[in-house]
Picture 1 (cartoon, rainbow, N blue to C red):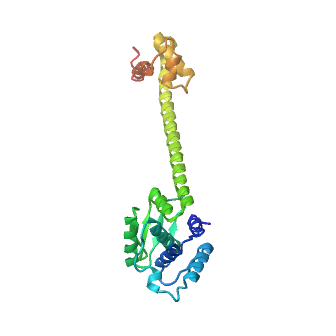
Picture 2 (tube, helix red, strand yellow):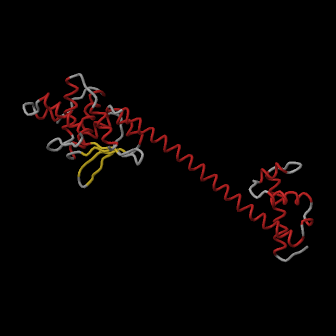
Picture 3 (cartoon, one colour):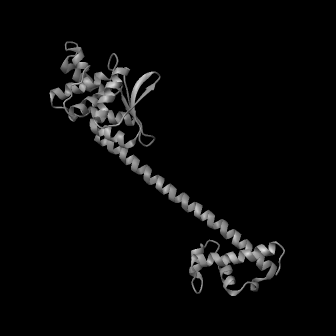
Length: 265
């Protein structure tokens, strides 16, 4: 079952005890269709049948039932009407994949009317077209969650926010892991270069060529390839700061560079 179906099932299970509220819900459902109401969702279909049986649309004032003019007195009634619209022509993507809610409207006139109603309710929505059919859509997770809460789908609204939180945590972990990996790789490349410098000096001049303070750092690097500069500094006696170790390895590099250039002095 899709996330969109879950949302519609949640909405269809809500029982409105006030007759006028049930009529507003039906008007919303009919507002979102062009000719006849059609859905594969069993719970929505059952709700629609129950409402049409109650209000006997064949004998009622068609324009009034279809809601050709809005007569909504407060946020509660507006939310009911929009619930009906979503049940008839709405869809929302699985938040684990992406964020997208849309209302596929029967014509541009109704799309514009609904756009005004929704934006005046404080929810930002955008106009669009798909295969020449007008629609309204929302792509921001917070706004989708707000819209679903407004029309009564509080449980699935929370699912969207939970999915967003999970994605943010996962992305933060991935960024931290990538950062750690990059730092490890950078440290490894630097250590390889330092080892190459030290091995060259040992090969050309021997271990005793280096003065004691440089030789101590060199030996720590040779025997502790995985150590960071900070860790090498902490292993020195007396201790050195990271910059102190960096400075001494820099001197070792200068010596190695001269040897590579053929300067044995």
